Image (cartoon, rainbow, N blue to C red; front, side, top):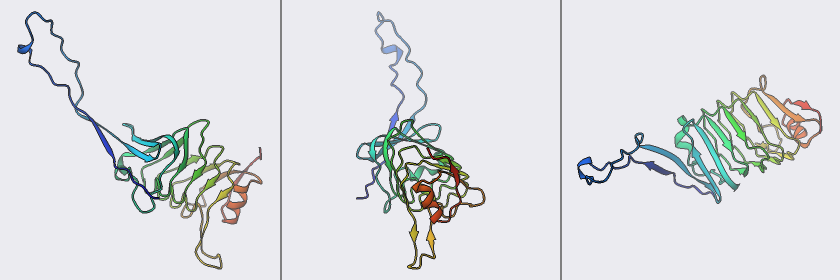
Length: 219
């Protein structure tokens, strides 16, 4: 079921200042600390136990545990902040990135995963159209990469896929399998380097899709 959660805007207003004349004469007065102008924190939910926050430095932080919602029929709640988001940080207990979750975030350059991540799945078209994304290292333990997950990432130059990956999606457009949409459809095959363990299921899947890979020694 596709679900979309409304953005919550949490605002911090300046503390009220009591006029000095109203203070009792015998009571010492203390000036309140200066509070900066009104500030907004952009946040919301993106899974049954997942939250998202856009930090002041432009990082979209996904925290909590479990699977992210998919956004095939409705826009992700952060899609309206495209100009503000320059990086994505995936928390330790996030298991799955939903369909189309980060699609079209054209200013994102980096995606990072927490150490000892429980991550397992990149759903279809999850990063499609992230035209500024340059590199991504999927964590060990990742099992599935959905079809066209990185399609249209025209600036992508390096991807590292762990040996744990057992499935990489590919969309077949006709029965003769002549028109294929690969996981890196639209990326530059001249500049893209895909690091993958030699002899792994991921390496075989990429070869079937006609994607050139840089073989790493099998662990």
